Amino acid sequence: MSAKPAIAIAIDPLEPVPVLVGRPDDRALTEALVKPLYAPTTRGWKLLVTALAAGMAFWLLSLATTLVVGIGAWGNNIPVAWAFDITTFVWWIGIGHAGTLISAILLLFQQKWRTSINRFAEAMTLFAVAMAGVYPIIHLGRPWFFWWLMPYPATLGLWPNFKSALPWDVFAISTYATVSFLFWFMGLIPDLATLRDTAPTRLKRTIYGLFAFGWRGSARHWQHYRIGYLLMAGLGTPLVVSVHTIVSFDFAISQLPGWHTTIFPPYFVAGAIFSGFAMVLTLMIPARKILGIEHVITMKHLDNMAKVILATGMMVTYGYAMEHFMAWYGGNKYEAFAFLNRWTGPYAPIWYMQLVCNVLAPQVLWFPSMRRNLVVLFAVSILVNIGMWAERFVIIAVSLHRDFIPASWGMYTPTWVDWGLLFGSMCTFGLLFLLFLRFLPVVPIAEVKELRRELDHHDARVAGLAGHGEGTP
Image 1 (tube, rainbow, N blue to C red):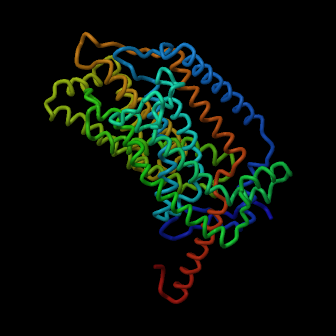
Image 2: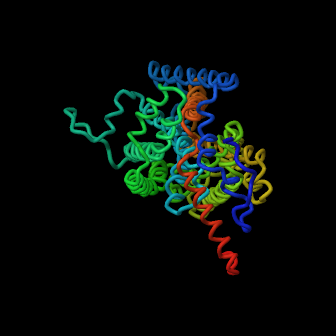
Image 3: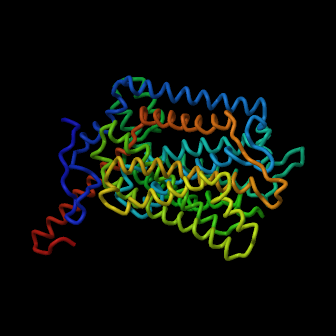
């Protein structure tokens, strides 16, 4: 049987864009979703992997330079002690929030449009958190003493300062990474068993079978799986709010103008979801085309993600407005100067770029035609990613470079090591994501099959009601 699905039919007259195009049977779905894993590698894929590997090598060189020379290899100075390192850390952590939101919260709310995109977002979360986790360690100055942040009995008698938000970061990020990995891997188990049974070579069957943990798809297996999956979703849901709230405390509990504000926790969480969904779109739009899975990841999914970007973008815009309002209304001249400096200071171009990317660009998503235009969606997602990195730079470096005393003012200029750590981490992230696309199913096969059965049941129920003259519910 051909793996190519039937042409689109609408699921519901009131919902003309379906979450699954056509109704391919189980075999057709399996063949379509595992085909990219068994197809021979193309020349374009090899070139892209080579280019990203070169970028990863540049990242490793920058890391090695930081370890050997110290953070003096960066452009950081006094007063700008935090710059590209913490900016990129907060940016990557924010990107990782979309995966948990799509996977855990939408699962608990039983949203059908989650099904085809959750693994895509979960993998992105893991790789983003992996990139983010490097920066709090290397910016310590002596990263080989990173375990001093852990509260364990030691002969040194050294204990972390739990009044500081920096040890909180260690617990938040490690917990987030652990739960995200377990949630992602648990969802993979039924599909790993499918790959074990369909792999064309003995080596692949052995490897996939090893990680499938003996899954046979029995009723008992499914019962325990569903209970565990829901429990992991329940554990992951509070992390969406708590992790970036704790990251925002790095700044909010300080006394520095531009940082000392109570709006940071919700503002950071909204911005994290904003940038995370944008990154999902950035990766998903080309991937669904290249892998030939437009019938599974449909315009319905892209449209809903665009709506989330628009909603969280408006929250971020509100946060910008309230920051400036409170700086004026509070009557603190230092706070007022900190925000005026963003508009008129030497880093003003970055502030204006932030406004264009985060405030103006998402406004086109008010129009349904724009939300379903792939070029527009891709462009907006790229701009949002750029704008959110600029926002973190403005919050961190621009707030630091001019504080209370004019005699201590200074400028920050990044070095090649700073640029290498930034762009090299992007290349490393991209390489990890390409390997994921190559060796694991990007769409959860078992969940899509379940979704198809639910849609068939829904259609049969609607047809039965219509046959009895009761109309659609």
